[in-house]
Length: 530
Image (cartoon, rainbow, N blue to C red):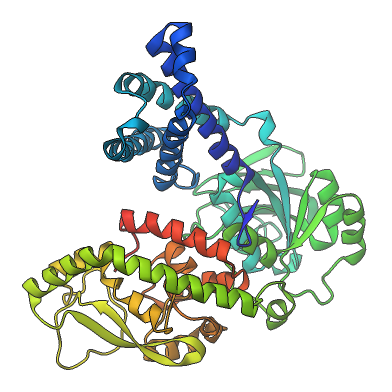
């Protein structure tokens, strides 16, 4: 399943659907324990609105699990964290349900059922998560992936797969492009002959100790921090040799170079590989077309690294991204019908939001005035559609300066931020006036975040394709904002651009709805603000 071009892992979908069913079963079980009489149970279940009551509880619990990141398996890794977040999520669901029951008491299942259902649902969901983590047969076998080449794109892809257990995939290894490019990085702790040497695959974590000129007498071993390599001598005995070295840089993926590019067919068949990913630094003269064609007809999938990274990570990686990939890639369609529908939805939703949030906006304005006086609004030039500038409006969150400060990024410890400003920035309440920018046609609800002109000019010099983000109206929120928050460095802006390009490529109302849904989660948590 995909939402706006990003694949939703099957394991995540299984969890969402199965846990909804388990919550329903827990409610049914609690109802049976509460009445204990079969006739009374039948009468209770036959009530016309009982299905709606059950659905309300299931929806509240599932949404709470989502908002507490319990469907992001890269966040919840430890069982203690799983249990704590599960209790917190179901506690939040109880508060939401209490609000609904206060508004309409007829929606309630009854306090007796709720008291019995709570521990049952926690036990069901926790037990199910532990079973899923253990690996259930119906989840399917893990997809085995072989990465052909050692470009940065392949290593970024391997890191993404490793960090996301819900993908149910594993990296078999890497195929080197240039075996001769290995560089010696270790020195043995005991004397060795001139012909003996340690070697490491480029940027890797797997080392080979070559004994003399006999390549058959080579053993490889993983070195996560400090380890030993067993070295075979001519007689076949093993001698332990210690080696000290610097670990790979933080964030660098450690991998096994299990062969060269020309070995792709043999390695893929022997390793029962399901997918070969092309990540060559230079394809000219390196691409084994015959071997890849044979694998394709044997049923092995072959995919380009940028395409796979985009599909699973929800961003277009800029490393070694060629203009031809952008030109030939599907997507980036902007039909007049879609743009018109997006504009109409912007106007309608903004008008409704202004009416609903008017009381809150008045409270924010009063708080700003009481702490630091006038002006209540902060105006600043920003770069909009097609590079045109406009004046963005916000509730003022910093001390007023008669002389505008140099255009720069805000920071967590910015001394200009007031106490009220820190609060309204955390929960994005300072951005309420931007709904007026949307009505004026200067902004959209969803889109790339508008940048200050001087910073935008600098970033266009530093980051390739940065100017392409101006092909859409800037947004109050967007794919980059909900995925990586505020960007205060060139590197963070680069990552945000990767998400912005993904959004522009897969522009749709469905993706906009998903972003609005995720924005609510970001606002409630207050994360990613500056």
